[in-house]
Image 1 (spheres, rainbow, N blue to C red):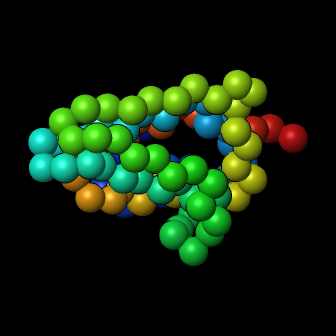
Image 2: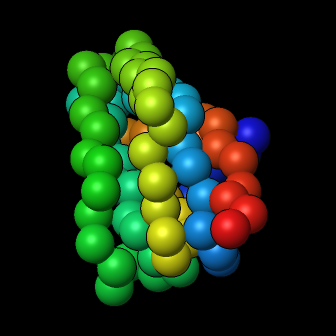
Image 3: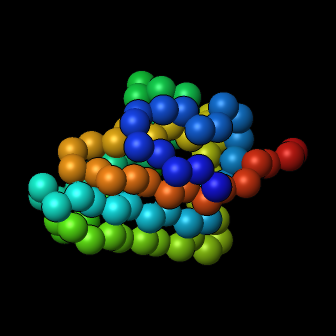
Length: 90
């Protein structure tokens, strides 16, 4: 589980995301993009939004596979993004 407040890579290898939560501040709607890769040069697999001063969450079952790692791009008005994931062993 990772709590993300700034753009960063949280996994550099294959893994599965099974839960995401996005919390916004009181300034406006929040956005975050989750990339398949170690930077924002990968493909956006998930884009999340939520209304101001609230949160949005989503469970993935089966978990969503990321074959090149996970990069979180924190957009505007984000308090935090919670990513629950586990690694993949071939």
